[in-house]
Length: 224
Image 1 (cartoon, rainbow, N blue to C red):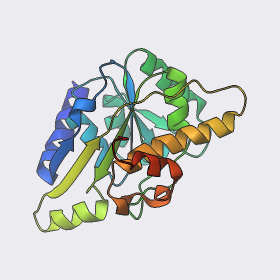
Image 2: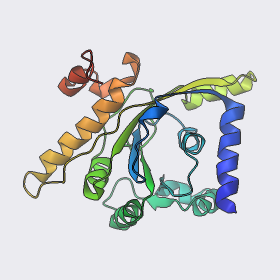
Image 3: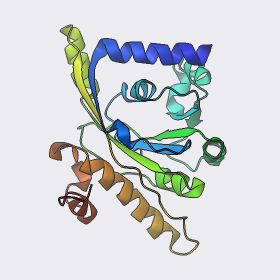
Image 4: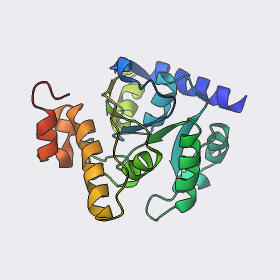
């Protein structure tokens, strides 16, 4: 009951606060289990997942710092979310995420680890690539535009809905993490994920990946 209520509330908030346009829904994987990776602009971002997907088995990772905010732990319990330490190796969160992925859930990750202060992409962390490669599930890149906290707050004060775009790219699969050259492989996986997200974003949002060679490959006609 609690899960259903939170999903309803998320959809209601998105409808009241945004004019949401979704591009590329046909790219949702056929497989039951997959990982969604996206840029992270604002507090509204997680709610968009519950608008796009009508599923009870969404695996939402929530930063540990929110555990101390009133009512947040209750909401996290209702959606069966997982609190995670973003800055240290949180093996418990990793094991639980993998367990649920292998049962058929959908894992939602923001590889940047926190909201971008400028709106442009910041450096990605290797956790998303590791989890998806370890579970062997498809990865679905999603690019968000228009959910920046300042922009949403500005429009709310003027009783206007914010134009928001969610662009869904083509899914892909990473190979298993090799035993040798592990750190180099994880860095390559992270760059692959971030560049696929960047390719779906306007140029002003690409940030640290604007000049990455892999992004330039994706931007060539016919590559995405």
